[in-house]
Image (cartoon, rainbow, N blue to C red; front, side):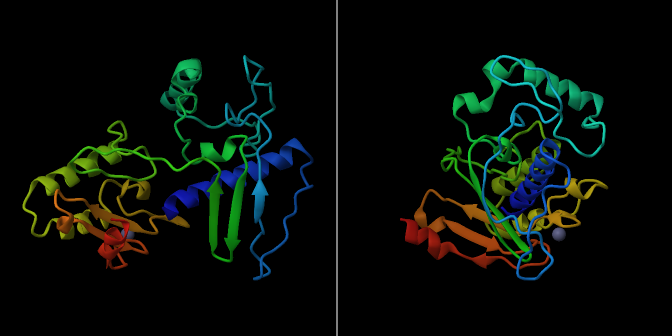
Length: 250
Ligand SMILES: [Zn+2]
């Protein structure tokens, strides 16, 4: 959850930087929070540009006004895409009229939700940053089985990391019940998966990373339900048993 917020922060700072470019480069000078250092972004914000369609400079097309690039770094205003990523973006843009999830009333993820022309609220204190989006809560029906929910779409097997973690979770779920939750804790705490910190299950990448973890088991019988929550990186924080909260929902 907090990892998503971290991504939201990056998106918001990008949007703030974009606002500077669109107006005058030196016009945005936020106040400071109570610590006298942290820039104060609190308040209700709304994007008023076409970043939802393209944050690079683009010509007008049906339903989208032309815009200068909102990217301030690199200075040429172009995102340094890898060739396959650029091809994917262009494919998505061409299919926008039929494939854009927002046209099917799906909730936007982060960072796109930050670019949509609907208000958002920033809540902030030194060391803490949260964005509240206006969109409705998302309800997703999950079939029986193991599910891995992170920043990407749940169970999106096209994301190698999600596919790898999901395979491990399915193996654990298919095995004996005894010790399964402990095995899932080990999986969530893992720093395996490659040299890049972002490929690990538990991420430590500077200020960005895994700041909490939730394990939820819904059983066929209510007595089998379990909710455990770690309010920190799962490799370091211990999981609290919050199962009584599930009972409160019944
Ligand atoms: Zn860790």
